[in-house]
Image (cartoon, rainbow, N blue to C red; front, side, top):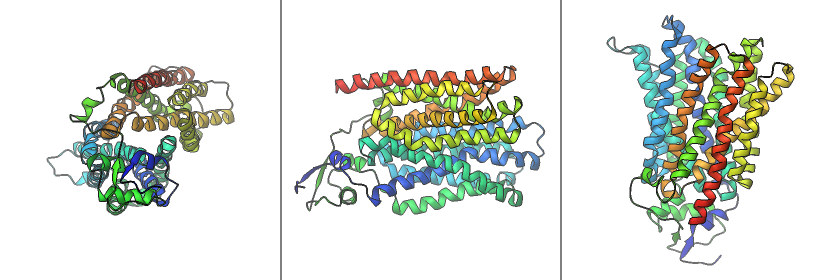
Length: 451
């Protein structure tokens, strides 16, 4: 290459070969998602033992504690993610993980709260603050991955990143099952808190900052030059390189920019897709074992079906990611359109158990695969200067669906509806998500055409 004084950073990233440095960014992001996957299940692991230890007669009193972490995540993603567009991706990821880790460890000692503090309240507040930290970190990690990936690999990288979520949820269950009988419920929070604290210490030294973010801050940064040299070892840099990024840094609140310059329809459609996707997803994951068991399936097989649903998502993550990279937003809409009838099919009473299990597995592939595709879109719909804000608000607003899904599912189950009707209801959000995503594709085309 020519020893040009000014280097096009976008072209440099697009033309990067596969390197240990680029793979390391993806691997560390996947490890971050292990923590989120574990945390999404930590209360489910601890609750049965807390109920016994605290002599709880009404299990419903733990309901707000379950929701506190999700609500904290929603606020963290919406309120804190914009800080990454101002202060950098790495700082916010690490700060969020420190906050999450410290308050998750503190939750292990909720039973030792002072007498004047209700221990339910203490646990609820600690889970809420931990959720704030996690909500700030995860959308920022998505933005970081997008900014290291060539355009044709972004969805694949995000799908691989979220594979860590599935592994964290499943692997955490195996670990807790071995330790819980001996050490009690506090061990679940100690594992969930000490792991991110230890990980943060490692990432402080190893996780690089986003090159696109650095270019917007200082086009001649020595840190940026060092990252460019690792991304493109074949590129001979001049002594004082200056990097050009074909994006502008614009003044004003990042959130406001999500609705400026014609982005309002794009943003609202993306939010609608996330809400409906999470609503259907958490409806299924919360109630599928209960619904199948109440329909006559042995409880062990019903739990296995729920595991197969997650396994389908893990299996399909790379396949779906590559499809989205090649076909773009219409592929995500098509994935959700296929997911809807598959979910409804689970409720057909005449299916044999083998066919039912296979259907659950394939439904998981499309439901979770579609979610991985949406996660990638959240990081690619916006320019660098508002990318973390855009991803954070999409995931944060989407948490409204994750909160409503289990609630709506519980209400419908309480009505005594037959299984096939319940699964048909669970499929409806995915139809709505497919429609919102398809319209998002047309909106993106119009928006891009006007630029």
